[in-house]
Amino acid sequence: MSLVVQISDTHILPPGSLLYGKTNSAAHLAAVVKQINNMKPQPDVVLITGDLVEKPEESCYMHFLALIEPLKPPTYILPGNHDSPEFMAEFFRGTPYFPVDDETCQFVVDGLPFRILMLNSHCPHSQLPEYPADRLAWLEWQLEQSSEPTLIAIHHPPMVTGIAFVDMVGPQWFAGLKQLLSRHPNVKLVICGHSHMDMSGRIAQVPVYMAPSTSHQLIADRGLDIAPWYINRGAPPVLHQFLGGEFLSGSYYWPEGFEGRRIDDDSGIEWDTLKMYMRGRRKAG
Image: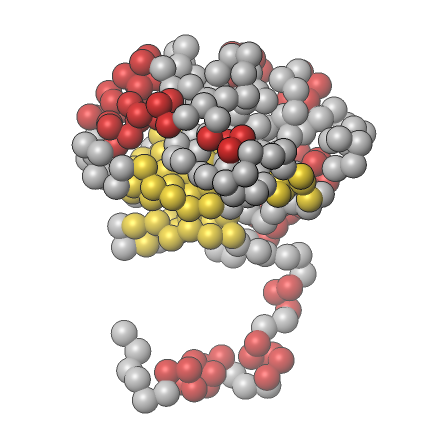
């Protein structure tokens, strides 16, 4: 069993700043970092899937770095539409967070029972995604190197969501990605962010999991092209558990200080006895 934690869309500003004058995105991220560090067992890796900062400026990245440095598990990041991949490559040089070595600003994470491919869907001077030929060629080469189970992380959702402002560029931006993945059944999961809400979907035969934001959540009508609203509330981290050759995904609450309260304590019945009641006449296994 391996555990991957995903957080997304942290939208960090310089210290003391509030997003939209209301949202303390830094406090929300700090709380999630504390949750992750308290998890038992500890995750094997943390992936942060873009929109790390609100503006791609040094003061924002300095604050973001200070907030994630306490994370205990190995941590890797990728760019979103609010980021600058080129600035990130320079700023995070010499750290383990963004180990890119070419202009695609993409990289591989090895050392787990599966590979992780960290992709770049950033489009200069736009909030919308792109995945051009050079990045697609990099991904194709990586997929041809190994038949190991693979998890792909990208910022923008490579699927039609039914949300007008998310889908406005159309499905053509991920058409090449979809065609490529259809030839590689070892890709088990694609994870993304961007939309500030949770959603599951599919690209070719591959499940897609879209994580909510640690900063704030968007309220968007399905099927209506009207502006969204937002809730000033961070989301918990998402856990992707690799079990039996597949990934199981979902939000993973781990509030501080709850370890002393368990249902066996509240009921006064030992855990092994409670499990026996759950099993009833059915044998385990």
